[in-house]
Length: 86
Image (cartoon, rainbow, N blue to C red; front, side, top):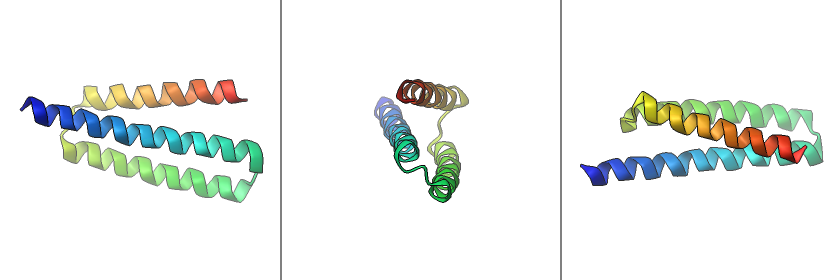
């Protein structure tokens, strides 16, 4: 049972790390390209990806506490990096 719990956390960490990297790529692209159409595509794609992660979290059996922990961590890290990059 502990092995299954560890695998769940590893997948959550990897998935939310991927979202963090995508968010950083969006900020970087915006700061260099200033392409408003590309910005719209990236934001829409990110929203779809976040929707998928919500679905995957539920199917994986992550508790509300675990999901909140990883989501808050993602938002805080992305916010800190975004503020420092501008």
